[in-house]
Amino acid sequence: MTYGNSDDVKVGQWVLAVGNPFNLTSTVTAGIISAKGRNINILPSDPAKGEYPIEAYLQTDAAVNPGNSGGALVNTSGQLVGINSAIASNTGSYTGYSFAVPVNIVKKVVADLLEYGKVQRAFLGVSIKNLDADLAKQKNISNLQGVYVSAVTEGGAAKSAGIKSGDVITKIGDESVNEVSELEEQLSRFRPGDKVVISIRRDNQDMTIPLILKNAEGNTSIVKNETSQTVSELGASFRPLTKDEKQSLNIDNGLKITGLDGGKLRSAGIREGFIITQIDNQKINSVNDLKSALDKKQGGGVLIQGVYPNGLRAYYGFGL
Image (cartoon, rainbow, N blue to C red; front, side):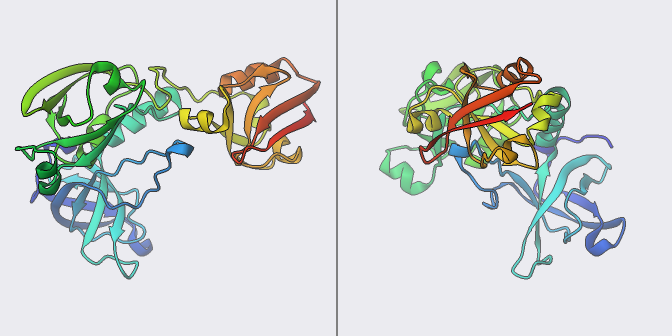
């Protein structure tokens, strides 16, 4: 199917939703785009777990019901402009509002998964707020266009480039942003290490600031989802620790277990959430470190040490 451009979609434009609602195969409904960049707060946000959701949906009044999720939202030229994903309803069925992930986010996610096996997220390193009349009056801001920067993260891309608390971000590249959801949507197109020009307003003066985006760990590395047969036998999924997790546990490295199936780790008594800090005294920071440590131990015993999120330190042993 041909990709459209969700940035070019206009409020009031006709669209069609394709799916299989209530097991009614290949159903098509029609409606208009009723809003863009809509945040409906249905995805959990937990930076401690590395969860940074993006909600910038295309809102439509095309009828969408259970069974439509994952189906195409297309324009009248047959181009894909979104993926139907959610409804707002008190009954569980359609009551007038449906939401689709914009295709420009979809393209980036698909490309990342094909190339790296993992979605690459780029961060500015800022805390931001929607700029409304009350906040503008409080901060003596005369123009309501843009997104207000309430804080910058030490070591983040924004801090390194000179963006300050109190600045108002008005554009990401050439795209204007007036809502937090719009800013997050624009950032979702980029990867760590990408260069982008940020337009800001400071003391009611406009300026542009070039910066290099970073990942959640504060560097520009691309994270690949690399596993081996040995790692697969562990029956677990992993992710690197965030800076906040390292600080709260007073450790400088670790790889967190985010899920456990029937594998060697569960059999050894390890529970979900355990943070592997060392394998046979080799420090572990990534799945690649884990793979390297285990490949050296083929046919032998393995000693894993680490810590749980509550601070409890533990040691486990098993054979490969």
